[in-house]
Image (cartoon, rainbow, N blue to C red; front, side, top):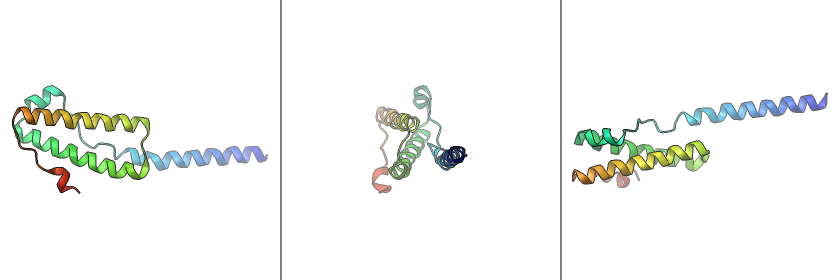
Length: 107
């Protein structure tokens, strides 16, 4: 009977941990990533706004994950966001758009 109680306690602990970490995943990257074609066809204003949104999302996620840590799935999403920012920045360079100093502003 003692082992059944320990199994129930262990199951309860796992369930609680699962419920505790699930809301944290809801905060992962609350922006939609445009494809390369969508980036190329976006207006300058849309491109700048997407860049700003992505930089803010990146900084917010770094702050959040600095305290909580990454799972492998979250790590892949983080890499996707970094790739998205670079793709936006490259298109902005091609269009010779001035990049706002977001990194300075959010420090």
